[in-house]
Amino acid sequence: MMRVSIDSAKCQGHGRCYSLAPQVFDEDDEGQGFVIGSGDVAADQEAAVYLAEANCPEGAVVIEK
Amino acid sequence: MTTDERFGRSFEEMRSDREFGTRSPVVTGPVSDWATDFSHMEEEWAADPYPILEDLRERCPIAHTDRFGGAWLPVRHDDVAEIAYDTDRFSSRSPVVGNFRPPLDIAPVGGIPPISSDPPFHHDARKLLLPAFTRNAVAKLEPATRDFCHKLIDDMGTADVVDAATQYAQHIPARVIAQMLGFPQEDGPKFRTYIEDTLEGINLPPEERVAKVGALFSYLLEQIRAHLDQPADDLTTYLIDAELHGQKLDPFHVAGTISLMLVAGIDTTWSAIGASLWHLARTPADRKRLVDEPSLLPTAMEEFLRAYAPVTMGRLVKQDMEWHGVQMKAEDWILLSFPAANRDPAKFDRANEVVVDREVNKHAAFGLGIHRCLGSHLARMELRVALEVWLERIPEFTLADPTAVHWSTGQVRGPRTLPLRVG
Image (cartoon, rainbow over all chains, first blue to last red; front, side):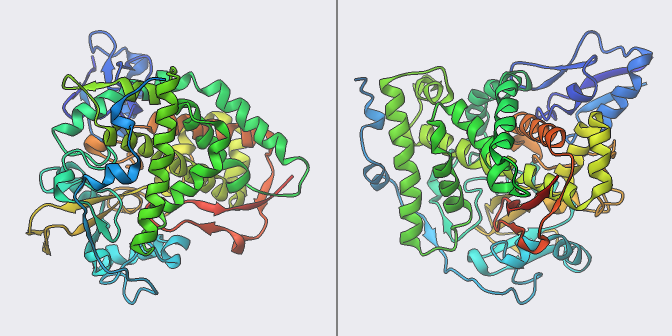
């Protein structure tokens, strides 16, 4: 199963992840991204997560497969 | 009447306490060689900087100029990114590259925090503002923004030719920022003057420049005092009351941050809206596709932001050093061109083409690192709504006169005159 996390040292709150994969990521009170739930990615969300990773300008979305 | 001695004095009195900065000679006129004499203040640059950047990327990826007292222009994505991340060697003390360097002791706060702030102060000054600019927070402004866009189009009436810059794009962010700050809605035209004075007036004689900056700060002090008398649920009152490290903010911090909202929050988005409409007016295939497929707009919009990134930032070199083969000196400027980074073929396929369905788009239009545009979620909301409403109401439009389009010089590039033939 795919797992995803956000490297909070790199995240600057661009919000590409929570715009492109809103079922997997959300923003906190300061606009930083976080992963909703455990980080296990449902099969039907994998494509969205890849897109989020590919569009994060800071390289802060980390996928483990 | 509420008294708050922080804001009791005039701008001139406040300024007299501060050390003055240094000035370099004003040099204007045609550029002899963009590799050794560049200037972002010349019309040739404003009209079309991309061939210049492409040429530099091939023959001199870190250009230099003696203008502005010495400045460097790196044009490769990786160099721009490296500088954006390197807050140890490059200071944000003054993000506007020009002929005036503020005194060294203005760091780490800078004149317009947090964009002008360096770590560690930067983090806390920015943290104060972040909650007001999250995607959820700005979503609350969307319905009023949409209504306002419709009103602007209603006001155009039945004219065949309209100026999308001055009758549409310009007003949208001005209205939204006025609302967030709690400033009079009718002051929009004043904001335009202040913005032009700040960003395009950098080659003016010093006394004129000081007078113009003074006019902006005096206006801000007036608004701040009005909020002392009548506090409101807006950013101005929030900043007046805010505390950092157990103390109320310095008056320069309050006024500086508000001026940042005005200057950085308006012409940037106005430029992005205008550049997007300019592209669609001259590219019928893209225009028709977005009219037929509105769900593509969020993707297309990111491509407009990549290809026509409005904002270039400034940095100051902290100490003499060799950097990637060039000898940088303390106090040299860096013109940190996100537009150049976004067109680097080493980073983007078909970098010089506008590909409206580009799905992978790691552009740097809102910057990289700790100074990521605070208002990026607001800008994206305004840009999306402005384009949605325009395409819904005016699906057919072309450039009325391509030679009449005029682009701004300086660090925020966008069309300031954009006559479109509609219908």
